[in-house]
Image 1 (cartoon, rainbow, N blue to C red):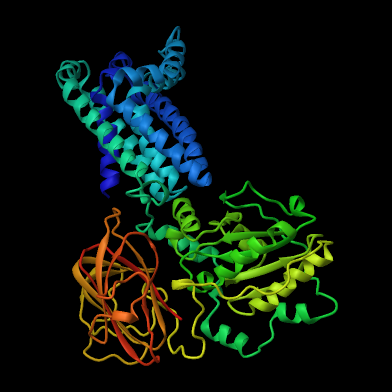
Image 2: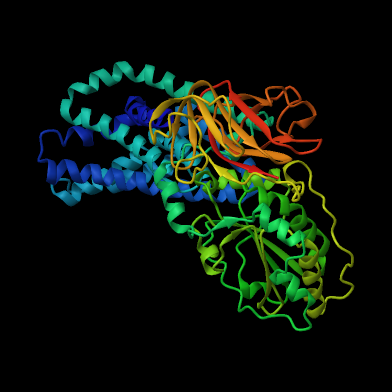
Length: 589
């Protein structure tokens, strides 16, 4: 809401800059004329110009997030240039001179009496306004483009346009009387504009020194609208699931999988032609790839999403295979298909890819296009494709890594690769990526949003989509959980309205993880963790100190508990010391 208000204010303030003076004669000339034939076409022409500028900036911002680290540098340069333009009207005039010249040429000799003439005058006015609108509009849209196409981006642009339209409406209503006021207020408007420029340059300096990498690469979508999550739930098949602990246990006990059967058979099965990889909203670490361009290589397509614990635990093997066999004809492609709305953010995915050390190509499948093409239904899911583009095996969920690697070795040998490395990759996972203790897990994935919540034990029951005060029972049964404090429970998450607030869970597992996001405006949220009423000590997870202290800075999976001794039923409590935290789901290992 704060960003929307600032975008609206930025639109209003564009009228208080000296570079607005050239368009005022066009605006004042429409005062008192018929709205439909004169005023409306002028405003429509102005809107068309702004929409064109917005498209250019959005395309550029989309390239920035696809370019990974180089794009981060390009984004800093772009934001610094915009900040300098806000500081210096002369620099803004110079940078926008080609655009202003186009506006002058359009307005020259136009018969402005009809609707068509008014429309052209509106387009010309948009270009003449560019030195005012360009830097601020560019700043808003660069940030919006960095988080990817979304309802939030549209709202930011709409808020800015509404602010600009408000200024024009005032000018049209008051007419020439506003001119004297503008002359008096131009100085104040310029100081506001320059203050914004200083703030932008300061933010770029903070980013350049690495003090806050989230600003460019992780524009948080933790406050994504319910509409976006509803669309994800609509596109995701109802049966889509993570590879569960029971699935891993089955594999560890010798349960057969498609990969195990394929690796052991003399003749590999043929599961059909590799589907297209079109439909990704972006590619990270690579240009877009196609099945045709991959012919001659063995391909591993790995479906994952960055807050999925099962995906994180299989990731060390996928990374190791890419490194071990990359020079022998294997191409690993990660297909990132989101479960939660915040995982649609290109910035969030790019940040996760970098944080997790993934260097192989990643297709950002936010619209489920590749997921549907493969008719996939699991996270993680691996598809093994031979050099002719035929699927020769698949593996759903965690486990059976040895059989998967043997299948890779066989496909490489069948493709004619010489000296294929032997041996098998051993478990390399640490922290949340460490293999689960499959022999002693008594708790399963538990969602906090009301759409899929189970075993909720707070006495008040769930109050959907509105703030409510919750109290935790004095005793919880195994796998029951509760909220305490003032929370708003939404379909996919619970949001803490006032600090402090707690979540309590009675669980049985070695590891406890919780998917969390910071406050909607990106402010970090401090928390404290207890295990059976005491600080976790040696039983702390990688995201918690021995005293149980931690901070939510990014929207991701946090490992909070890793028990060092024998696993038993325990009561986990997390207390948030700041408001705004967003809690999504528990997972165990």
